[in-house]
Length: 256
Image (cartoon, rainbow, N blue to C red):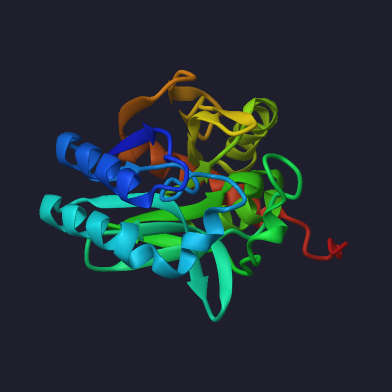
């Protein structure tokens, strides 16, 4: 399977423009899975939630049409409305069917306080992408190891974390991501927003990190698209190393 790390800017307050940008990359990138950053559909700021009840018309339908025509998958970040609540979501689409993950660990103090805009998700999500099992994560989720440990224990092939991290948060995340790979014997694809927005600059620095903590592919701090061919044999070997999960002490109450 070939995947594309699409480190691009989600234009602020302009979902139709972002749908057009997605269309261009979908039609001109020969991959099975194209991954965009957190809140790519709307841009990442405290006003992004106002589009949540109209995402079908301004973004989703257009992207789904292009994905269906190309016979590929796309994963992107978007605000979505459900049961009267707005969630920060990762959406995987093949043009006809969508799978969604709702961000569990909202960020209270980086670019804006997400808790003022979004409700918190309450469950992990394993995407099925052409037989590939993908654990989904968004931004600040990376700081909470139990989510990544759950994915490893549930036999995911890789974890994809989409993000909208400015420079200071990115420095922290880059270090933690390599530790998450090593401690769970799992590859992680990290796709970050890039470019200037009011009051902050998204840091870029997207990367593919192996289960040994080695950076296989990385982006610059500008708009960048990198293609990675998944090494199925290496991923299989990494999963076999997760036997250590059976050694976690169940006689100890680890709850806080």
